[in-house]
Image 1 (cartoon, rainbow, N blue to C red):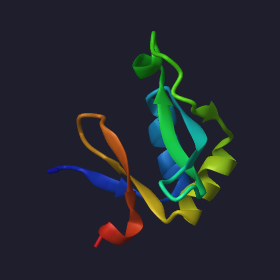
Image 2 (cartoon, rainbow, N blue to C red; image 1 turned 180 degrees about the vertical axis):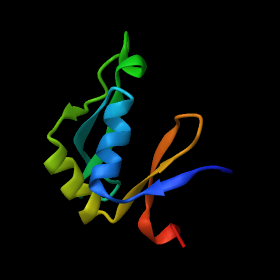
Image 3 (cartoon, helix red, strand yellow; image 1 turned 30 degrees about the horizontal axis):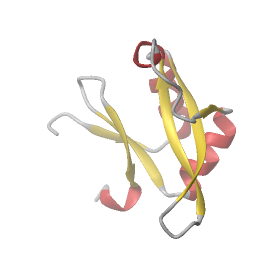
Image 4 (spheres, one colour; image 1 turned 135 degrees about the vertical axis):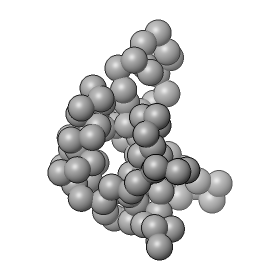
Length: 92
């Protein structure tokens, strides 16, 4: 994970994703107890070409970032361009 860093500021996250032709997506899924929650994803044009839809729906940045904050998540980015949503509690 050398060189990876974590983004928490909305502007930084949005700019990083947009610079890579990405867009926010969200799906309502149920956990094993039947409770519904929002699953956040980022869709990148080159990743989604020719793939079957996974139930993710495009959404606004406002809704996506609000859910990111509600779930206390951050975006970990690596120099390779790979990114993951991680708990803000794991940042320290």
